[in-house]
Image (cartoon, rainbow, N blue to C red; front, side, top):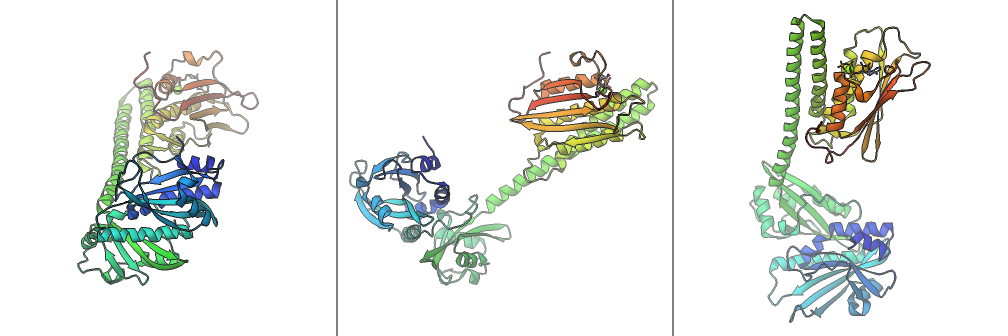
Length: 505
Ligand SMILES: Nc1ncnc2c1ncn2[C@@H]1O[C@H](COP(=O)(O)OP(=O)(O)OP(=O)(O)O)[C@@H](O)[C@H]1O
Ligand SMILES: [Mg+2]
């Protein structure tokens, strides 16, 4: 089963511009169906046989039952079986007809309106509106809906609907059933639906809106003015105390002139309230990270106090190392607490933002300030969720601390100075992290798998179990006599494939 766009491209042979026009139509055409009390379909002749039309897409009305119990997308019709479609396509003129429905609707009749669909000045398909005729009289509201849909269908045939330009946001946009005001070319209201009345009441408007202009009701009507001036649909929210109503004005055009318009309006106060709650959920997650960071700092200072009382050097050293490891974890939480970027979820952050303060942390801990080490950061790691950035931060701290501790024994000063580079690379779904120094290189018979220090043990554990990744470590090719040491880490970015629970060994 192909998608509407695939069908348009492959079966109807639409080019890029035609596909774009078609997409703009299907983003906005629900309103044709809702006001038209029926189904709306888009058909186009097939490339192979122009006498055969294929249904590219359809939309059902939320205001009336559908004629299509099956999915009509992909259905093919010969021109002679759908004469109204064929005539609309070939003449480029709006067609209207009443037909007797097939076997599923024994005594039914349907009204069919076919508008040629125009892209870049030429007819590329037909927009068909099909509505089952009922024996009962239409309500005033339904008559109003239908006359608006008729106007829009005429605009389709003229190429002025869907409106040119960027389509407006769909989220929370008012729909037909939410409330309707019909206005004339001088912006006077001449019809209001019951739901529209309720929404206006909620904004505190008590008077009958008939014959009034929007601004005479005490509302900012700039959205109507700009919709009329720009001949396109315009959305605006109006807020009064704790009530927010979203207004969407659509101008009705004839021969390029504004002949009137209508406004869909919806009370979105509840939606707004939920949005605010979501926003504050983000803020809560940030606050939690902030507090975790504070707690970790408290633990660090307790350990530092303890270290002062310990007599043995070994004990002091062990406590100092723990302080550093805890600080590395605190940095991750601090970064998450301070990440206000647009795509922030509260639970992930660009890892560069973690790596930078980590490096600063190691720099601050450098014993001799007169033999500095240059720390370089290259490439981008992208956003990582907490479950990945936390272990990676610990691993990076250990590797950098090892450079400080082991790469440059006293007297070792490579040409160009002591240097360590942290580089990030991304390939497919993997993140590559390389830490490379220009120091003395690993000890002669060094075997990473056999390394028994706590530092590399932590690196091994975190990379294999928490990051589901691999480590390669060895002698680099540093300049002139200095081989240096490099460590490569490689792990998948997406965390669904993360091994759950600790490894067996
Ligand atoms: N960048 C490096 N340059 C030279 N040697 C290194 C480097 N990184 C690690 N090594 C060697 O690997 C050994 C193991 O490192 P590891 O971090 O596991 O333990 P450690 O640093 O000695 O102790 P700890 O990290 O527990 O304080 C080090 O003792 C050192 O000999
Ligand atoms: Mg170490």
